[in-house]
Image (cartoon, rainbow, N blue to C red; front, side, top):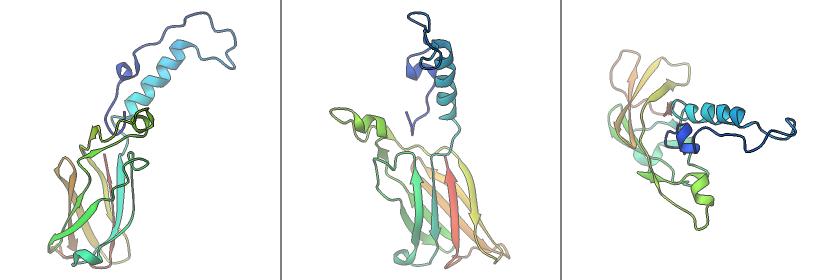
Amino acid sequence: MLPNSSDLASYGGVKVNYAPVENPQTDFDAPTLSQMIGDAASSTRTVPRGYVRLTLNATDGYIVLNSWDAVWKSVTTTVPVIHHAATGTYTITFPTVVSDEWDAAQQPPVLNNNTVNIMAIYGCDVEGSTLAFAQATISSANVITLYTFNSAGSANDLASTVVNVVFR
């Protein structure tokens, strides 16, 4: 399940009615349930997995993680680590393994059984009225590298600027 991708087989495949549906107001018809499961499973291949919103600074201790969320945050609450690597270059590092809500609710709980694998950057924007640019790339399975530039296109730390990154 999330943060991994699923398909209909992940949920036991196509469902078949054991008996005719007696009350369609309270009971699901198995083919209808299979369609809903298939739709939900398909969305796991495209929906964003999380985002970070940070205020930049050239000094690590002054970079502010304003907010973040991920599909695993309800269980694995380890905040991403933000590092200023060089002028105009920051890294955002997530845990290598996380727990999902379903597995953590099992008895006994199954923890840290999902490997983080960032597969796409869906958006990267700079807030504010000053013209600036940001570009994010995937450096490894759990690390995003953020590059920031001033309006002239030169690498710049963009101190005190808020940047948002959405990823899958």
